[in-house]
Image (cartoon, rainbow, N blue to C red; front, side, top):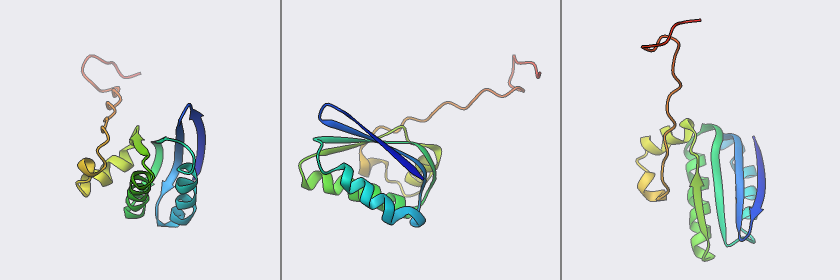
Length: 117
């Protein structure tokens, strides 16, 4: 698991790569809370999340709750398939309130109009 943070004006952007599971929860909690210390808003890029469980859900809920208490905003961006699966399973899309963009499936070689190479 790795993270990268950059800042654009009053918005910090945090990209999470790898697991958001119980095995990384303590580490990620510190990263998320530290990311909320200074900006007016935080964008969390979830496109690199490869594994996601209920601990990951709790971490995102914590980030949203902490931001509200500090009069900040947190927006979840670029949800990976692993994140989408769990949010759908727990029916949490409305709770987080962020747009869920589902990436198009890649075209396979056996699709109509394509010839296998």
